[in-house]
Image (cartoon, rainbow, N blue to C red; front, side, top):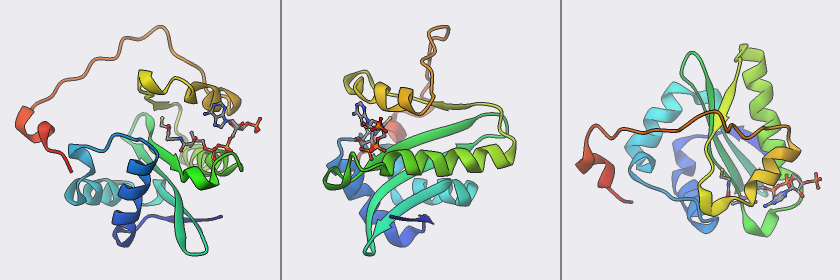
Length: 145
Ligand SMILES: CC(C)(COP(=O)(O)OP(=O)(O)OC[C@H]1O[C@@H](n2cnc3c(N)ncnc32)[C@H](O)[C@@H]1OP(=O)(O)O)[C@@H](O)C(=O)NCCC(=O)NCCS
C-alpha cells in the first residue's frame, strides 16, 4: 500500500469506502466540508492506494492544541493485513514531528470492537471525561449526503 496526501479527486472513493465500512457520513462529509478540512490539514489527511485503488483513508486534524483522528477506514477486502496500523503510524509520526502533545479520537459505542485495535497501537480509553457536543445550527447538521 502506498500512502499519499488526499486530494479532492479521490472524494467519491473515500465516501464509498466510508459507507462500505459502516462509518457514518454526515453533514461534515459533503464536498464543501471535506474541502475545508483538507485546506486546513493538507498533510494530515491521508489515503492508502494499492494498484491505484483507494483502500484506506484517515483524516487527521490539528486545532493548535490537540490532534484528532477522524474516519479511519480500510477496505473490508484488505483488512487484517496491517494497513490500519500503517495509516495510524504514519499519522502519529506526523503529529510527533509537529510536537503535538496529545491526540484524541472518538469511537461510536456500536463499534466497541475497534477499541482493541487501538489498544494494540498504544491508545488508552479515557474514563475521566464526559464528552459533550453543541450543535450551533440544527438545520445545517441535519443535512445528509
Ligand atoms: C479498524 C480498522 C481500520 C482496522 O484496520 P486493519 O487494516 O484491519 O487493522 P490492522 O490489520 O492494521 O490491525 C492491527 C492490529 O489490530 C488488530 N485488529 C484489527 N482490527 C481489529 C478489531 N476489529 N478488533 C480487534 N483487533 C483488531 C489486528 O489483529 C492487529 O493486531 P496484531 O498486529 O497483533 O495482529 C478496520 O477494521 C476498519 O476499517 N473498520 C471499519 C471502520 C472503523 O470502525 N474505523 C474506526 C473508526 S474509530
